[in-house]
Length: 218
Image (tube, rainbow, N blue to C red; front, side):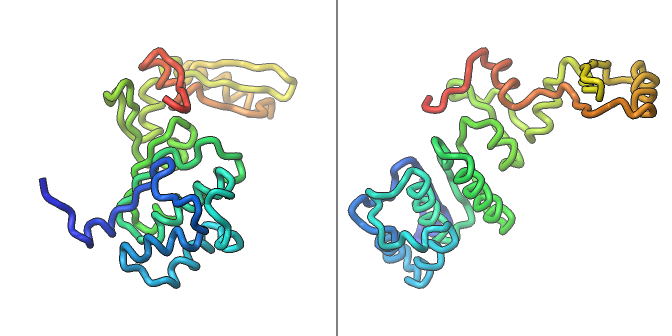
């Protein structure tokens, strides 16, 4: 097996649970330790803390951070390396919606910059939002793979349309030529308030393939 050299290691960033957090050190000193290891100039420490919204907490001990702030600190350590490949393990587990949205934004920005990101998550909505390709695993085996859209279409067995009309009634139509006339008449009459396909979500596909529920701490 080939041993990674210093430059190879610098090109890979990993966020894993509590990995890389020194409880008694401040946010700034936590990143400073890794700056020394990877030969990163100290100005990047303050810059990266600012990028993840921890500039005001840079003197705060890691032990005093909230769950969301701790996750931001771990992400900051990964981003500070400016890696080409990033591995993220449950980066938003247990976080409130606002913090989750902020972390999603950071991940998408790195993705837009050309980083290859491997994300492990039990949140199928998160996977659909952030990932270009998804591998669904069951007991260590990949049971389905593809883009989120492809996977959902593949398991769209019903292939129907769900309509909610302005008069408060709901209606289902087959998604095909046989419903074209009725759908046209409803649209022409301005009766349709919302229309959705019956395409499943990644979570319902997972349930169909494995017959079990998603668990956050599996």
